[in-house]
Amino acid sequence: MGEGTENHINSKLFPNSEKEPFLITSPETKTYNCLAWALGDNENWWEADEDSYWLPDLPENDDITTIVLLFEKLGFETCAENGYEIGFEKVALFSKDQIVCTHIARQLDNGFWTSKLGVSHDVQHSLPAMEGGMYGNVYVFLKKQNK
Image (cartoon, rainbow, N blue to C red; front, side, top):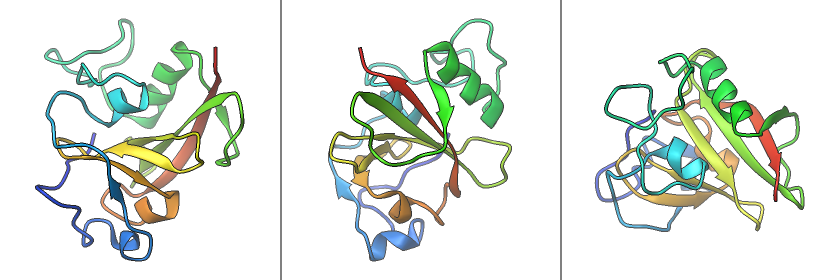
């Protein structure tokens, strides 16, 4: 799910970030990816292949329907709103073709979003800053009540 940039955020890959810049919040790492980061796991690379962490009994692909199913198995449900809701975790799944999930972002308590850019940095951003770039646009939102 998605490749990152090298040592900086390339505005050609994320053209809307020129108006609403990303805030880099971590060094680059190959330890985890956007799916893991969205799940709060910075120890594993989540992906549907034999060398990565994956839930059993899930199809081995990165289709939107599979990623939604993964989140549902972890207690999330689809929702229509992207606004911050007290007491809920929220994620946004991105796609370019409405079939393959290209990226996942997690909402922060301040209403902004956080993403892991492939093997690159974690960043804080608005949704408009991320959209229209290399990952496409938000296709679906999911939320889960905090414990």
